[in-house]
Image 1 (cartoon, rainbow, N blue to C red):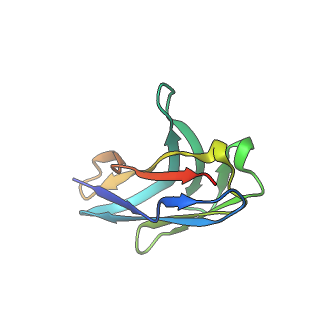
Image 2 (spheres, rainbow, N blue to C red):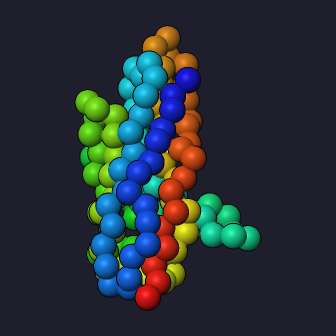
Image 3 (tube, rainbow, N blue to C red):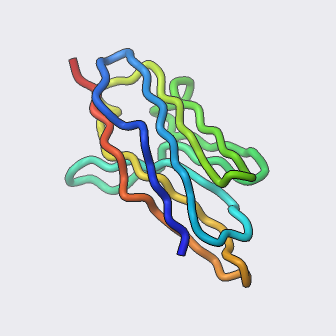
Length: 120
């Protein structure tokens, strides 16, 4: 079992910054990609940003230029630096990781989520 734990959420004023972190635990052979998703009540979970083991990144159009994702292939962690936050960024943010355990069994794991609230 691969467990992901997010940290760094909270309340911030519009224009402010937050940094989310995600740590993984479990017996991991390799990780193909890690990412951040977010969800608001009544809506589907949406991709915010992802990074592959090769360093390729992908961002939602709404966060390009404001958010930066970074991953550590050795520690199997991922962070999301969020700048110039807007009220529309308010959501529960979830960490996701996809890869293989020892024995090459695939996994697609999610954290429990961390609340980000952008409000004055």
